[in-house]
Amino acid sequence: QVQLVESGGGLVQAGGSLRLSCAVSGRSFSSLDMGWFRQAPGKEREFVAAVTWYGGSTYYADSVKGRFSISRDNTKRTVYLQMNSLKPEDTAVYYCACRLYSGSLHIPGSYDGWGQGTQVTVSS
Image 1 (cartoon, rainbow, N blue to C red):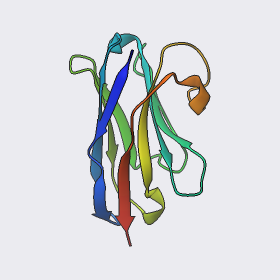
Image 2: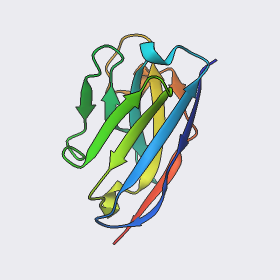
Image 3: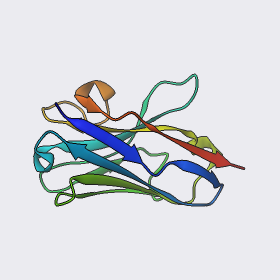
């Protein structure tokens, strides 16, 4: 059973930065594709970023390109989301997810393991 634990959320002013971390246990981390999603109140969960296990390719939602950066450290079994130039519209609960099999990296249904989420609030 895979376990994912996020940390690093909080309250920040617009223009500020935060780094989210997601520690993974219970499965071979190096063979997992990893993703970050977010969900704001009243909205559907949306894709933010992903990094593949093979080659470390990265993918981003258009809304965060150039501001967010996803990375992974296989030795620490951890994936990170560096968020810069934060905007109030980035306010949401951020979820870490892992994908062992195939499917679009952009779709929540492709992932088979999820963290509990961490709140990010950006004030204007």
